[in-house]
Amino acid sequence: MSGLGWFAALIVGGLAGWIAEKIMKEKHGLLLNIFMGIVGAMLFNAILVFVFGSTLGGWIGQLFVGVVGACILIAALNRFGRGKA
Image 1 (spheres, rainbow, N blue to C red):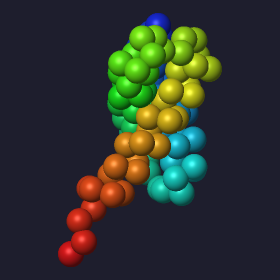
Image 2: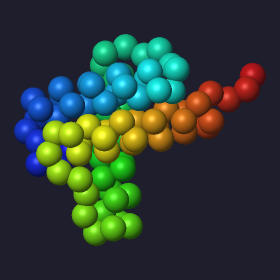
Image 3: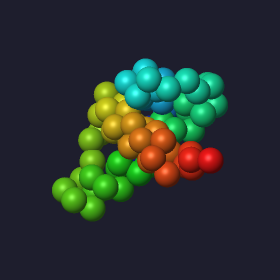
């Protein structure tokens, strides 16, 4: 998460993961929400830098980036992670 300290990244990542969980109508635990929010933010930050050359800054910008990135990760896990038995 660009420009945030590690403690702020945990808070914003957890909040972003929780919001994404509610948007995608999934049920995860706190640690997975934090993981999804932080990894999702890293993923979507990389996409934004690749496409536009910059990313959103500050708490609100990184929260938005984390939510979108976590939604992308949840959708990918739903699509590819759970194979049909």
